[in-house]
Length: 95
Image (cartoon, rainbow, N blue to C red; front, side, top):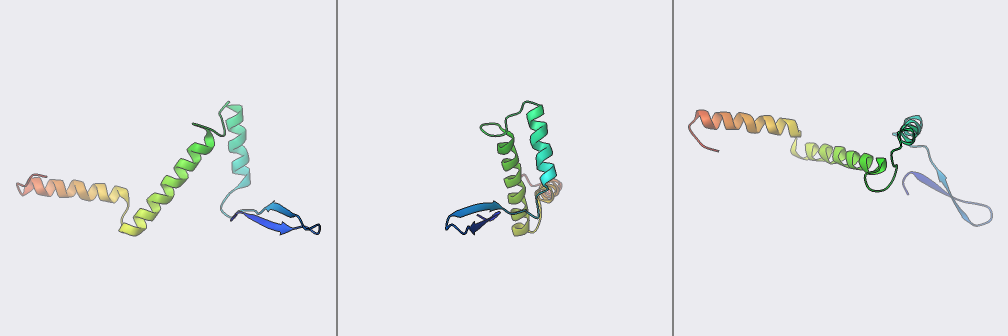
């Protein structure tokens, strides 16, 4: 549990307490949930807001990882491929 602190109470039982996350704005989350409910959108389940947010978060994280690994981002790769194709055609080569 990375975002939660586990504290042992005096009775010997374990209680879970939420710890504030430095990267997440609570007001933003509350607004997002309120807006979703007002619009009648589902928060969980297939096609729900949580699934959409998780997808976008993972895609963004993976894009960052591949950019760090390769040394260039996806857009730079497309531009490089386009330039290479133009150069190949100018040289008479076929892709």
